[in-house]
Image (cartoon, rainbow, N blue to C red; front, side, top):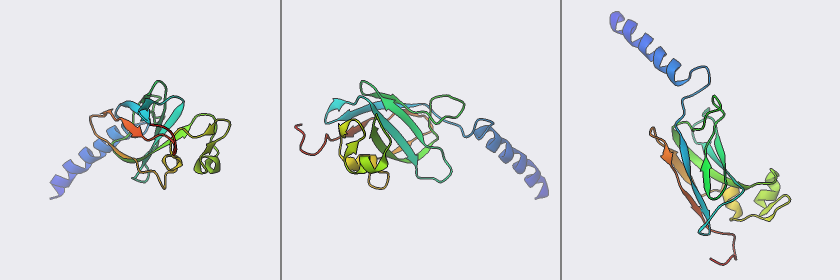
Length: 147
């Protein structure tokens, strides 16, 4: 039994060290498209907020409807494997109260329903798998907007 532990412990430690090297946890590339009311999103930030405590948030900005996630780990694009709540924010400010009221500082109304900007209310959840890849996001336009 002690012999088995002497083999398992070093292997487990190596696995942890590889996955959480000097730059932090391992990430996989994640890109995707965001559409709002069927149109490609522009000047919209996207955040993947981990459901697992301790994992880093991943975020990016949609231009022409496309985004790439970054966690800040080694300056490389990517996200940690896991389940996330997804929020959106209009570019131009970070006043949380303004977003929750449906307004973005300096930009007028949000281009999507305000619940998508609030991590406690967003209906969006996504999972980043070990293979990474494309995760597309579709949200309705603001209330009262024509389809």
